[in-house]
Image (cartoon, rainbow over all chains, first blue to last red; front, side):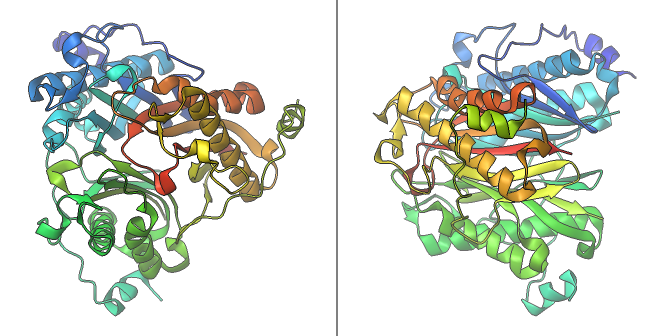
Length: 154
Length: 154
Length: 154
């Protein structure tokens, strides 16, 4: 099944790629690698109130996982903007997940799963990636989650 | 001298590669690059009590450096699981080190040296890598250190 | 216009590449990718007092942006040390920006722009990169900003 078809089956209508908020660009293809800038958990370009703040301190685990899922959707949206057709993606190589955390909150993997699960749901076997998940002190705009990606394209 | 031989000379018996704790995979080869997921300072699959918590606030510099060394061993273990024979590693290109720190603790390089020194001890000249070391707010399971890697393989 | 010429036009005299403070190296070329270790905001090898500490808590936005600019200059300095001539750089693929932040400070993009704007000023169209910006708990030596880079070279 194609990646574009899986998006439809999951009822995901990719948003317009969020514009970078400063002097950089969202995606670059170098050789077979597609690098995507860190994406915040914007929902159609806006941070929902429940996705602002620290997970484990205002933002719940469920809200954090949904925030990570939104980051993944934005990564795919940027990928599509860069390469035109998501079926050119061979696989997701790496996700870097940055979780905005309250002190003492260490259940980071379930949050990041929101992004990982979406990649596997949409890219299938090619969605299985390496990843690094860390808890950070702050994120731009107070976002709860930011995720960056490297894809392999053909 | 071979990499496998150096492991023996250092008395390092690689553990079984730690399993990812969620929906992702530990390693991917893309072209000549081998990406490894962030590895926690697990010792044969378990976090020792002295490797849980914040360096400079409960975890000492020596314990932190040992934790980083364990991350490096787990990276090599994952590399071996992915490519079969560590002698296929041409060099370590990059280590990304995330240190779980207490407020005001800035002696991060000596901690990360635990990982860097092991890479050079085991990979020799090919173990000399670029690296980035930062102090983070929290890590999965409260681990003191997490390190990710990119290797070049042939 | 050449990259070396643009440096002159901007009055930037690249410092000697800062030496790594531990057992790693500043730069590695693998294929067409040039990886540079995370660079602190050293000014000719020293951290100025105003670039030590947390942005939003002692370090101002302007000082933070200047610190990020210094990181970018050090990245170029390391690139030159590694490849000899900056005109071999085809483009900057990725900047990873780590901002040492005080609690509640979320205006991270304007800080990181100090690095991004310098890359575009010096590399021109090839300076437009992907980037990830996060706020961290601590950085080596208490530096306000650390930035790492991947370039594409020919």
